[in-house]
Image 1 (cartoon, rainbow over the protein chains, first blue to last red):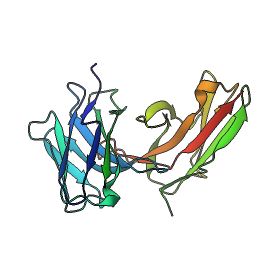
Image 2 (image 1 turned 45 degrees about the vertical axis):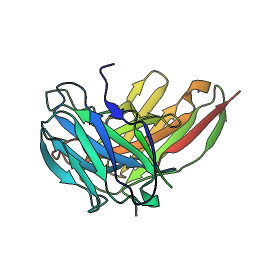
Image 3 (image 1 turned 30 degrees about the horizontal axis):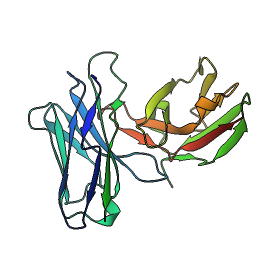
Image 4 (image 1 turned 90 degrees about the vertical axis):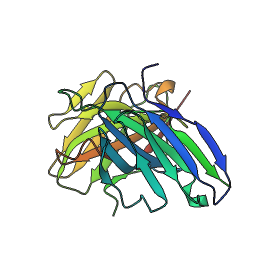
Length: 115
Length: 112
C-alpha cells in the first residue's frame, strides 16, 4: 500500500498520559498535514510541514501538542498530559508541490480515546 | 460564524432520488473548492473539485457561486452506496500549502 499510513490506528489512554502518533506520507510528497476530527464535526487543521519545516500551526495546537518531521519524511504528533477533550480522530495527509499535485490524500486516521 | 457552513442533515432519500446539498463560506479570499466524501469512521476522500463554470462527474454535479459564496452538490439517481457524509471544503488563498477548511458535513442516507 503506497498511501498515507498512520500508527497506531487506535489508542486508549488514561488522562494525564502522553501519546504519540506517527504518520508516513506518500513517498516523495513534501507536504504533510495534521488534522483533528471530533464526532459530528469536519476535520480541523492543526499544522503542516513542507519538507522538515513546520510552516503553520493552528490556534487549536495548544502547548501540550507538538509535531515534528525531522527528516522531511515521516512525522510524529505528540500530545502531553492528555485530557478527555483530546479524544478525537487524528488525521494525517500529504501532498506534493509538483505541478498538478494540488490534491491532498488522507491516511485512515488514528483514533484516540482518553479515559 | 463558522467559515464553512452546511446543513448537517441527515437527508434520508429513496434509491433513485435526486438530492442536493448546499454550503456557504464566509471568507471571500477562498480560492479553491471541493466536495469530499467520508464514510463512517473512515478518512475523507476527494469526491470532486468545484469550478465556477460548474462541473459534472457522472451522477454528481457541483456548482459554485462566488458572488453569493455558495457551493452546491447535486446527486442524481442516488444509490445505496452513496450513503455517507459529504464535506464541503474550501482552500483560502493560493499560498500556504493546501490547508483546507472543512464544513461539518451533511449526512446522506439512501434507502430502499
